[in-house]
Image 1 (cartoon, helix red, strand yellow):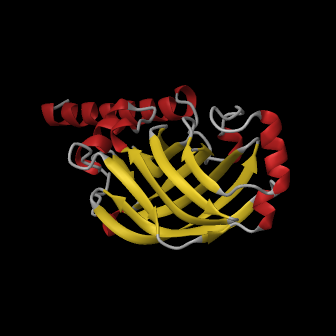
Image 2 (spheres, rainbow, N blue to C red):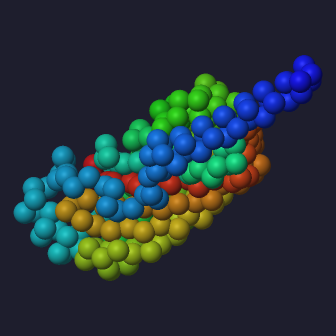
Image 3 (cartoon, rainbow, N blue to C red):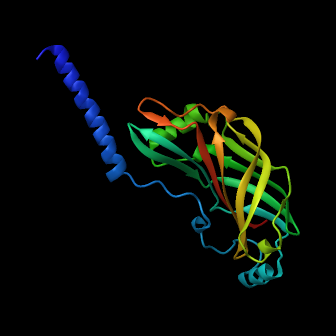
Length: 236
């Protein structure tokens, strides 16, 4: 067999090993990506500030949700992106608990809210992906935070004060990688055990925010991803 043929055979073998190894890693070794954030992901803990448990129950029954609220330590923010890794479909998920924010409620209307996500602490199950995320994709050295500021009030309605899940929309200015856009994010909110919990997701088209497409040799990604949040609030 000629040297050229040997090189071709070796090349095919290497490709087969890479593809086969990738299939085994994704379908046998690697854990499934976590599902989209939901209320069940919030920790079942009593508030560390504010009223006692008995007072909280009375307060919830009386519909008293007015006041200032701050994010609790179990708040979560992150991303979800579909990847094709050497022909295998993968869902990439990265998250952080470093979310700081405040929310003001007047009656049952959210009149102000601001949030900041520490992008330097977002991590996934793959260190090489995290390196790409913090480096060329999100440039966290230059843009270490993502922020959201509410620009229109949100009427939660009486059901929220009674403890029911309510569907609302939050319109405000979202800043990612130094680019700010006005967005409207669909959310679900509820009052439980003296805490306000909010969960939602928003589709981010990379080009709209100046975010480079994460694709690289052997890995193709879609041109958009999902920003996910699960915010837990305690009284400030």
